[in-house]
Structures are given as C-alpha cells and as structure tokens.
Image 1 (cartoon, rainbow, N blue to C red):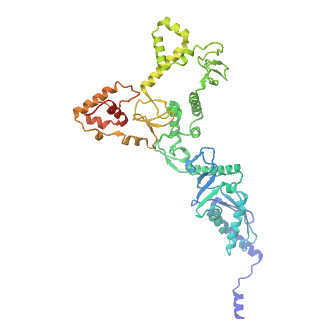
Image 2 (cartoon, rainbow, N blue to C red):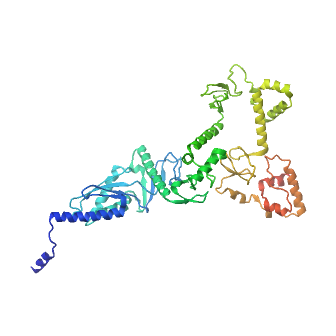
Image 3 (cartoon, rainbow, N blue to C red):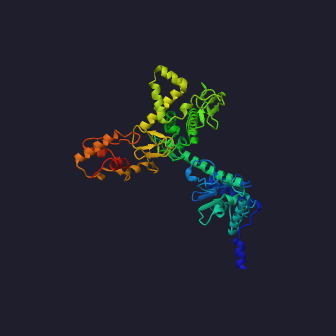
Length: 517
C-alpha cells in the first residue's frame, strides 16, 4: 500500500488536451528550427499543420555509376563517360543526382504519438521505386521504439538510396536504367536527364571557383573563364576568345582553332559560345568553304559575281547553279555545250611532263603562236594550266607529303616535328613517319637518332672529308626527297653539338653512296 501511494505521488500530473497540444506545438517548432538549420533550403515546413517537404540528395561520400544507352551528343566533361560507338550500353560516372522530394504530414498528436504520413515525388524515379522507399521508411520507423521527423530525415538522406541501389558497399550506387524503365525511349530520356543535371551542377561549382588563366596568368572566377572540353585547359574568356579569333582570321590549322596550351581542337559549340556572332559567322563560312574544297564533285559557279557552290552530275561533266541557274561545262566552265566537243578536252588528261612541255611551248611560241594555241585550247584553260604547273613545281621543290593523308606540307622554320594542317597528325620531317605518341618530342630521343658518340671513331681529316662528300651530294638530290639538316661548320665538335642526324637519312648515304673498307 505504501508503494502504491509512492508511485501515485511520483506520477506526473495529467495535462489537459489544450496543454498537451501547446506542448506538442512547442516541441514541433523547436524541431523545425533544428532541421531548418541543419538542412537549410532542403527542408521546408512553415506550420506544423501544413504539409512539409524534404529534399533527399546524394552526399559527397557516394560513388555513382549509371548504366544506360549512349547519349548522341558531346559531353561537356569527358570524364563523365568515354564514348564507344560500338557499345549499346555505357557507364556514366556521376557525382550528384537530382533530388527526390519527400513530402510529409505530421499527425495532430505528434510528437506525443509519432504518426507521420510520407509520400514521394521525383523527376527521374519511376513510381515502383516510390513504393520501395515507403517500405524502407516504414521498416525503419517500426524498428525504432520512438521515432521522430529528425530521425526519418537522417535515414532518408544517408541510407535510403543505398537501400535502393547499393550492391554491397553502402557508398557505391549502381543505377541501371533498364531496372527503372522498360521502354527504350524512356531509358534514353532518363540517362539524358541525369547527365544533364550532372553537367549543370559541375557548371555551377565551376562558376564559383577561382582559376589562373594559362595565358595572362591572372586569376578569375569560373564564370569569367572557359574550360575546353577536349583537354580541360582553363583560360579567361578574353584571352581564349582572342586566340580563337586569331586562328580564324589567319586560317591557322585549316581554320580549326586549337587550344593555346596543346594541340587539341576546340569544339565548334565551344567556339560559338566564346567568340562574337560576327566572328563565328566567318568561322562557319570558312569551314564550309574548306569542306567544299575537299569534295571533288563540288565547284564554284563560274558565272561572274556568283561563286556559289555547285554540285556536278554523276559523270563530272556539267553543273547547274541553284542560285543563278547558270548551266555550265565542268571542264571549260563555259555555257554547257552538249553537241560540241569541249575545247578543254586536250588539256584535261595531260601528264605532269606533258603539261610542263605545253606551258614551255606556249611561253616560247611568240605572240602569233600563243594566239594559235589559245584558239586551240582556250586562253583561260592555258592560263589555268600555267598556274597548275607553277603550283606543282613549287610543291615538288618545297614540300613533302604528309605520311598519313599525303597532303603536301611546307616547313619554312622550326624544329623537325611537323603538324599536318589537314589531318592534324604529328610527323617527323626527316623520317616522314607519323608520331602517334602523346609526347611527340620523345620520337627525337629514341635510338633512331644518331648521337655524336655513336659515330665511328674517325680522324678529323677523314671525318671532314666524309662530311664534304655528304654536303656535295645533298646539292644533287631533290629537296623534296632529302632535307639538308646539317652544315659543314668548323670545328666539327660544334657541328655535332648543334645538329642531329636521322638514321634513315644517314643510312641512305652509308649504304648506297659510300663504301668503307
């Protein structure tokens, strides 16, 4: 009896319903303040009687792998995925995911009775996963003797996504688009949505950081910088715009602007965002002209003042301009003459030697002889042939063929590492070998290069005599076959300290010209 009286004395006084409601409201308001400070804008609840929202986001400890169909566009960040056109499934490396919105409604007696209703919404999850989330949350609430909104928010943020997508390691999420959507179109849209969100978040983070421009060496916020996709180099917008404009104006690299810090080309989409609309319009025009020049079935309209591109017929015999409607012969560029033989015919299939002979005969024919030849072949055709012969002669004497695309390349200065302006391949000017290495200068440190200590030990008189013979021989060999990369200097040790010989070139002399006893 005494114990019973003591228990009754220690029992807290009964509260009226109004008092209990006021106490619950105070506890809820305190919890709202705590959650708002903890999650900032990710938690929203203005009144305990209204529905609230909590945004479930992936924290930085997660590594996310997304598998799905390939995206048919260039990614802003190449490290997200290495595209392989032969694969139907790609793996994307993500760092963030769009938030899952958790809406909730507190019960009238919360927190005295922890009755909370949850429902979910998301732009990327299917309804099936909402049911799984609700099930995970219900099991978590049942496992706790007394749950709270704070505990539910913590669980959803830290463990809910692991329960949906983890394959063992709770910090690794593997999301398969086929597990979320059955329809192929929906899977593509799903992957595009997640990758777009990833790029947007990276852009926001980039805009807030500070970077040093690799050109002017000054610091700028990311919003005032440009990060090139192909190589990742970062420049201030003013410097990179000036560099690209110079490449476009000068036609450098066949009007394909490159990164100032390496040889990687700048993507046309990036060029459009960096330069002014006027410069980009000129770039597109030059790019179109270069493309048309590489097409054998496209020529400029010969009508005066037109110059529009015209596609020839399948036999390369005629063309009709879609702008001025001029119908012309593809050989002589005069009005089309189906019933008359083309006067350009005799010049159309000349060999290089025949073309040089005809030009020489024209130059030596005198005034009357030139008039007769012009009537026979056409004056414009002969003038065009003269230009072609002069151009071919210059190419033969001053250029070498690119070992990859065979385009003629002229080197007028600089080292022996040459970049083809058409196919963008690096090659050795001496060996005429394509250099595939990411470090093109390593080619010149390989053993194919003859160093001074590798030369046979010869006396100075014999060595000087050998070099004189090589120098004299170089004068007899066409410059397009062999580039003289050495000079006869005195003393000879200065020669060897200043120049290196390509073994391919030197072996030609040693194996075919000189005979050592």
